[in-house]
Image (cartoon, rainbow, N blue to C red; front, side, top):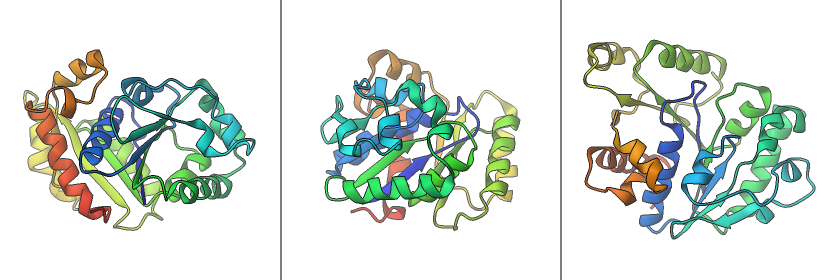
Length: 245
């Protein structure tokens, strides 16, 4: 079993879109997937047709096992641990990053026989507790939009989380708008200064809005559109890096 955290400090960069589409593609490959939604907005849970039946603070405080929070999604082979409003105070429920890491590692161990891949949709926050969650995951996938604020956020994360090993750290460029010269210039020129980035790109697309309207990953709803092809390419790149077959 592998645990993949999808994380960014800046919101609005396609983090949740990435989560649900990768989950759908992994499930298509026969891998049982759990989407663990830790973002209080609960967007991944909503897209996948799951609503929180229990507040996650019961798990984080040790009152209930993680299995009590899991429910099926609208997709075969994809389950969801749905987000709820208690996650807004996640940093108050868990004492420190060490405790957060131990909690998620115990949960991953308990779920290892049921799932081949756990994808954690992380909130856009930088706290010791969030750092503990990231340390407990095998890989960290970071969508980075080619904009000044998104790049600045990425550089801050990379500087503060310098403990991450090269194989754990998987940034990639997302939401490239070909109508914007600055986006194209950054990808063609500045990206050379970031050798750690995956060379798989996700373009900006209005298809993402249609995905929200349908509450269905774009790779399921409109598999022939460019955005779906982009996500299939990303999954093809990620799968061997996760040591999944």
